[in-house]
Length: 264
Image (cartoon, rainbow, N blue to C red; front, side):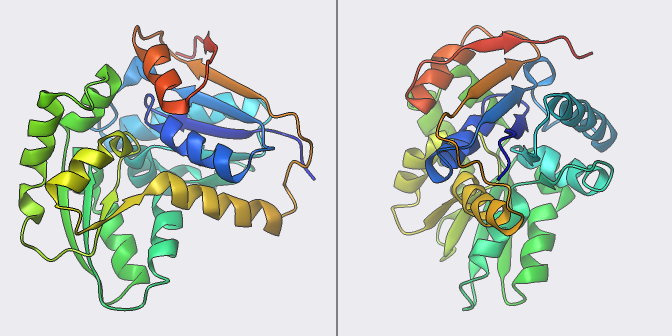
């Protein structure tokens, strides 16, 4: 047993979608969440910048004595995970490998769409991992750079959101796609709009669910589960954002307290 918390970081509130799924799957675990709101968005930054920001986030969480770190950010996973995962003693998990591991259980030939930030799509990280694990897969990728910013603003159900999703789904129309991966953790808030635009014919893959399942197995494998039933949760932001608390509470379905930190 290990009562230390799980650490999670993202560039903003998108990683709360991952936190929510981890909470469902692992209700006894303590969680420390870091939203690097001061440097949001990550999707348009250089790889070098994202690596440096990721290191800062990881080191903050390590100072909080976490037992494991989840990079709950598609851009940071694609740009920084390989650079940082062997530099620290604490295990570090991204969102790509757990998702692909789950998808590969279906061995039939699949056509998979990936939507993510510009930086993630440019890195081809999803495509590379999918083709490495699922040789017969066909991958269609498309950047949807506005969706993360819209999620941070709470623009997820209005007409602007509907029209934006409609435009971003055009590359996938009439493509006979089996699955669409939400390769940015901000995107699950648009699931209903994506589902409607693709006429309910495509399975929507939420990375948060796959990460939670992956962590459950990982914690059991290394005997890191917290068996105590007194869950604690701390949420830190690198810069206070006006709408963060309102949107986060709606997303999580609970009242939260936010702590500010100075990191840079």
